[in-house]
Length: 250
Image (cartoon, rainbow, N blue to C red; front, side, top):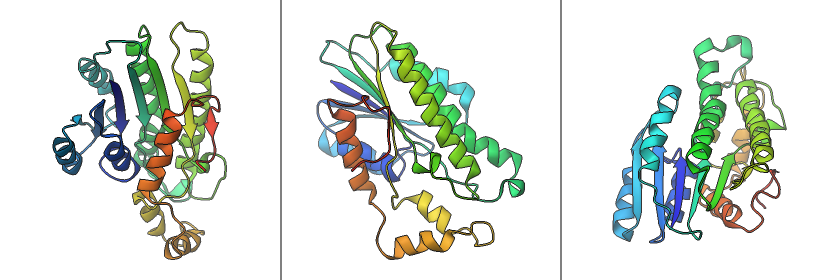
């Protein structure tokens, strides 16, 4: 049995990841604020095992209990079993010069994009520390961590922090008895709500908005389905974790 813990499955990449990973030999544990009923129904049709947990990851103090509940559903029986974590949940907003952003907006962005994956990963490693199984953490990062634009300071800072956190975890796992393989991936420019959000920002607040609108109009954005399929290939590959920050999925 392979277990997949996936955050942000209400739509976009997370929804596509869950849909494509449904299999009689997979147990999916999906986390998002609202339940994706489409995924629940799809799992029933395929007779696939899916547990859906409605949880707001901005509630950082409750993540310890959340993972206690999750790991009561995990039963690894052999060395052939596996348990994978995909930190996918993210938010782009606020897109604006930093002096125009409210304090709570800054806090929410950093909490969801960086602090929540840190707390989640900490819990995952704590619960799997003594498991001699195939363990992998895939962090969905962004090229915005490296290629900076104005008005994206919160998102870019959080994703750069996620890259550093991924590298630090990978170093730590070299020192343990049953290490997890860890990688962060830049998935590319995808036709998701994050892209829709940035196209709706005023030119005054984001001077590159017209370039993003043009990319969409010219059909140059990847589909969530294609992106998810490539991420799954990367996650399940024998080479996973050899490159800790993978800057392209091609």
